[in-house]
Length: 296
Image (cartoon, rainbow, N blue to C red; front, side):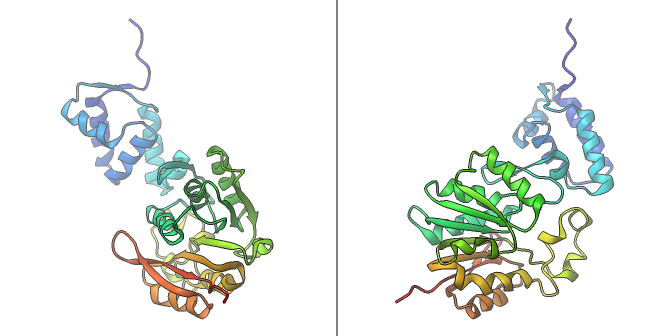
């Protein structure tokens, strides 16, 4: 009889392995995420195994390797996304690595808001300030296939990661990458940008210092620490908006959960009009938008 593949396992064995690992602590949702993304066992299949533990399944990664990743995560606090090297976001998957911020689920709403604000076929030219992994740039390019975009970051590691992700999605012909701070690399496009998105660092330094070690010690401070009041980057972005945006062009930002009034005031002070706040899925104002006035 042929020896079964190393990753072949019964549902009963998998469920027992899962229970034993969780007895040592840790989040069940994180372990299930690892099983899904690296092991190929989705949540629905896991539920079915509870009803039919005698079923046999083929893991994409042997249990021993999954366990090694789990205990490395538990002992060091390294995010599972870095250990696996991948992160699902919206309807695609991103490569992620240390030195680049792991995309958050709430940031997905920026894309929906951008589409709602623009309406129609989308802008002719858009930009993503502080692109990181390239998640926003990829989603915008997918949403607006006839538009051109520019993704900016000051980090070489981030631009390398964004380039890999854009290449994987076949979007390098519609999104260009530039290195520098906020508006500065876009000078040749100033006055023509119809939509600009940014998810800048906005966590006040004192709050960042108290974050969970898995975030504070492993994800880049450059993408998280927004200075004493969390608004350093947003000040810089707001200050250049009126010059860089096309007449009627939109600026759309993500910010900290308690910064709505301050950020909207900054956008007003920058000369933008139609300034509004937007709520996340929990009802918290986490986004702000403003528009460059249209010339008479």
